[in-house]
Image 1 (spheres, one colour):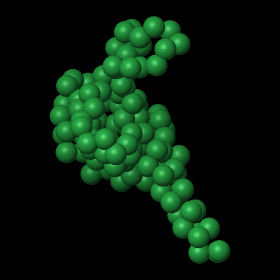
Image 2 (cartoon, rainbow, N blue to C red; image 1 turned 90 degrees about the vertical axis):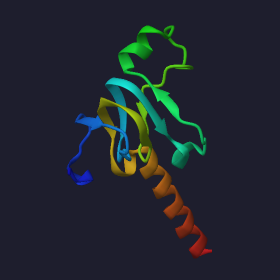
Image 3 (cartoon, rainbow, N blue to C red; image 1 turned 120 degrees about the horizontal axis):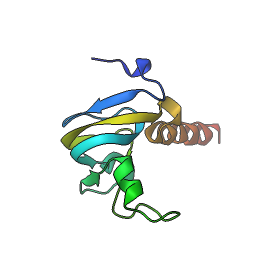
Length: 113
């Protein structure tokens, strides 16, 4: 098992069902990947993930990825599929990390009042 303290931006992360992803990443390769992002987004349904190359090929330049989501958010749970993702953010710079820092900062400000 790899420690989250050993993962840095640019690393390749292998993902499979049951994993709770500790970093933000972009899916490079994968098949039938579905993630539960309820801990971040509050949405209760699973979200299909596609490789970044597929998303880019099927999306017009300058438009958002409406149906093709290559982004794996930290604290997401992998429900189905396997793949490889490139780490884009870790720790306090990840989506989950920024949320936790914001919560602790808010709590600190409340205790000062």
